[in-house]
Image (tube, rainbow, N blue to C red; front, side, top):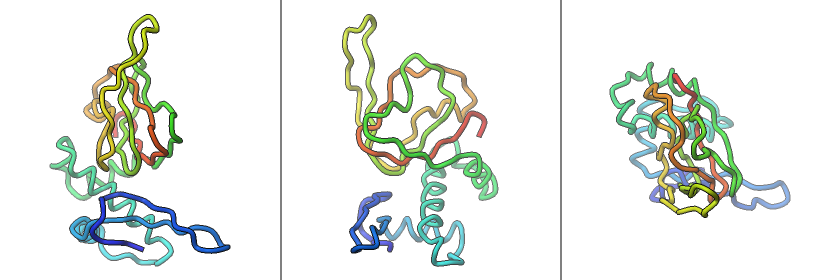
Length: 167
């Protein structure tokens, strides 16, 4: 089901009796209209959730300044290079000082950026990121080779869209 008027990209699992749960993707009406305008109507009811997720990711990617000028075909090519990945709470996504190979677009969840002090002197919380469409590791898409300047950790269970270098 699609519910209007809630935070973009929020996903909820609702109990549906003895058969399990139901996945619900909450979208604002303007985002739903943008997704349908971009990709056209859904062909099969069974693929509705995946269709909406893919459309939402494309919509969020288009908001990123480096990709705003891409054609519909160009954006579809970038999207096709990536994959949806999930991280459990407390899993490290990027490690400070290590080479960055992938960019990650946040779909659902909360990430924290932490700077670890040299010599085991603890760590400093830099920020919490929860806005769908937030991208970490964006220098990879720009073709730059760099090391992570901070550690990025899943503060909650997260769903991200991973884009490899050169996407």
